[in-house]
Length: 378
Image (cartoon, rainbow, N blue to C red; front, side, top):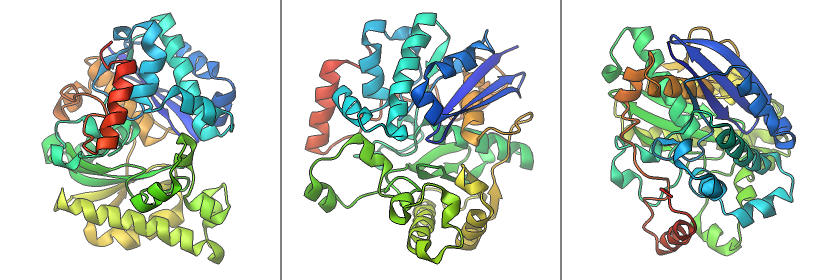
């Protein structure tokens, strides 16, 4: 019997999912804003369900499957900032002075990694989409985010959900996954039960918080960018609203609404080059719980295939899809009921970090600078 927990570190909430014997036995939702002020709340929430065989901890942009006990404590903070969060310590310190929840949670994640290390918990960090060998190398060039770990985890749930619902093997599943979170949107392509492509939150259209992809001419013109800028420029900035529901039915927000929705439509259309005939389009994430969002996507994406809301694991009642997928990964890696699914998507075969596919000279120089400070395998 395997008991495992997965953690989804969302912009709005941190969500914990525990799986035992293939079913959800524990759900816990923590407000990200609360964790930014009181990081110990996450440790206390996990402690209540110990002992566990494995915990998939917040893994940010993703690394090859890596156990926490492989990282020396004295190097852990810098290692975590560099390879999990793609963040320099000086940039974190600068961003924290602004007291934005989106960036403050990065500090929470670092503090919790250090505390988990001290407690010698069975912690594992897992890949993002860009680390997977099932994604061709040419699709990775000069990318960092093709779908962060939470998006990969939602795809895991999608493969399981479609296979069970249609009574088919994993290698017959095929879909596009549209995830709309509070901060970012993403679109992932799955063919033959393997993730083959993805557009992460800053490479597709605008999200509710994030500006999405940016014209490189604008990047050059501005010159100086901070990590906190990743959480700006989206629909919230355009409308001046901090609640996505406030956009619904308000003509003054039409521009932001159309930009966000058309961005999803374009992302989905572009990934049809990677999976030409998806069985269906699966919807997940906080914003896709809104009736008006689902109806708009059904209208815009209906020609690409049947539209469905992503299902849930047995026993799951309130936690998001990414948390369930994270628990699937944890339980499968620990040798439980989902080990065949984890094996099928080639999670163990994933390699390296999100920094490994940079070719632009300036990108390469930053990579070299970061690796001099702390190597991926200390």
